Length: 460
Image (cartoon, rainbow, N blue to C red):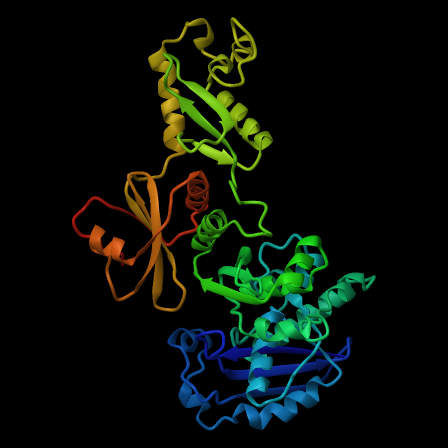
């Protein structure tokens, strides 16, 4: 038996949310056998963005039952059932939190239709509920209301049951999220962690940092460490005493903090990233008449066009650049022989190897290549999402150098360099930072870029 559900909440911090609406459809694998749908008075304010999204407001909930009044019905309809939801971690956590407030331990196995869809429908453009069901031809009404979303999840789940002909994937997706999978000594640790984006720190009994990680769902990632059977997970389970975390909202800031603090703290279990995330780099050496394109191990005292996790990928891109920009193998670290280079023999080099092309002409193409791999401005702010509603984050680049990050409220303005520095958390620049920031810029993973150098900056 399955209990397919959807929950709408007040929003807010992870441990302060309340349920505003719940819909549960009991299903025997063939048909719906029972259902429960109700508004719920959360006895707390609803965040404005949630009101706008769901259409549920405090006036609608004034006469709705409170959670303790519907709790018995929820227990009855979910008895002997697997909880099924689209992003089960969220809905199941909300239910457990509400029951925990009543002093009741609500504990079930669960299935997530996001994970199931990714396994059984691997070629879908999106796995968000609305886009996914529409692409599958499943009708959905009352989007972002519990009944509408729960009914769409029922239809999606029925399709997934049909697709899983051998039932192997279905079995593998069953999650025992709590007591019988996570050791009891870790339950309180798990419950206190947010499901938000950020950086987490695992400590041993004397406070030393064992491991630093980044995740878009801190609670889920830490739970993975505490239930995994790989070597790293077993080391963590053996020594873990406490978990700290910092939410960032922005994935880029989480990545920057992670690499910065791994290098700074040298955690026992973080082997990758203690030194460099991207140890190989391509740079332009301007010491000779014909500037040289060099692939080498990254050094702190040199600037690189781009850095890489391994030399194979770096070499592949370098060869492609040489081809696309009609550069010369002889004037690179890929030099293949004396005399005419390989590319010249195949009419893809303009003759710099034989001095048939002037250094000025050749170096201009290298300069164009360099411009394509630079920051878009020498001085700028990169604006992104914040840690909560009503907040933005920023990355500060000054003279092509990453200086740090910060957050500001939407009703404030960052008008000058002094205000930026007042809000900024400073970080050291390195090739890893540059690679992470450029990657997010190239993928347009930001709200806006604001060039600096003017006396007053308006971020709205």
